[in-house]
Amino acid sequence: MRTTTLFPLGAVAISVFSFLYPEALLPFRGYIVPLLGLVMLGMGMTLLPDDFRNVIRSPKPVTLGVALQFILMPFIAWLLSESMGLPPELALGMVLVGSCPGGTASNIICYLAKGEVAVSITLTAVSTVLAVLLTPLLTWIYIGQKVPVPVLAMMLNIFTIILAPVTLGVLINYRFGDRIRPAKRVFPGLSAVAVILIIGIIIANTRDQLALLAAPVITAVCLHNLSGLAGGYCLAWLFGCDKHIRRTLAIEVGMQNSGLAIALVELTKFPLPAALPGALFSVWHNISGSLLAALWGRKHQGLAPGP
Image 1 (tube, rainbow, N blue to C red):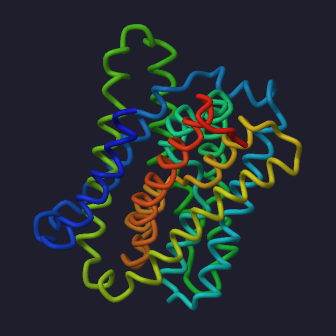
Image 2 (cartoon, rainbow, N blue to C red):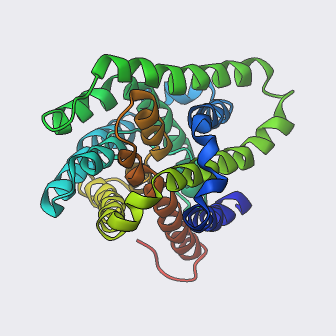
């Protein structure tokens, strides 16, 4: 809980610091990919093979969640980019965020919001595996006519920075789970620090562009996230899911692995401003997710009737 509470504050603080003093973080641009690898390793160390088997045990919420993740979010990103007339590099960044799998903080937010944590973990794991294929393809479908999208190179990059560390983490947890409990307790904090540093590095390296484009990018990012949260909840309701599953799908759909979007910009040599939506999304979706978790958590305790 402490990590979830402090993360938004740390993200906002480093964003302000790196905007005012960019020279402090400019030399660390090369650390974005290793930092994300650390986050993914930590995520893998929270998973076990049974988390993937839960797809069979709970097919409806998992299938619905994955479908919404990869259909709703990239479409909303493209729609917002087109309707707001964003430049191609920012539209690319929006679509990259929308095409990414569920965020690493979604499981903690789901726990605080009294959702179905097992379903949340399964959704994050399954969407992360599918992202190797779907993230490059969706990016190409939505933005390939404006910006060259090297699909095969993106697949290899995602395998390297996402699937390989996650798989290693799962194997470590499966083989040494009881022995590494102290390390598993430390990793959420390390992951939060790593993502905060990634945000600061991107803000520092795109300071000039951010000063000119802050208003439209922040507006687009906030609308994207809020649309995902609302869409995930409402569509889960339409499909007859109970309130705990509705909360879970809202969080899983609305919270993206925006760190992956940032790393893909770096590895694929896209224009650096394309990383701005991912950096801002990392800040905002943790703020909105934490607020939502606090609201639903209070309602669950009987302080107010909850949906």
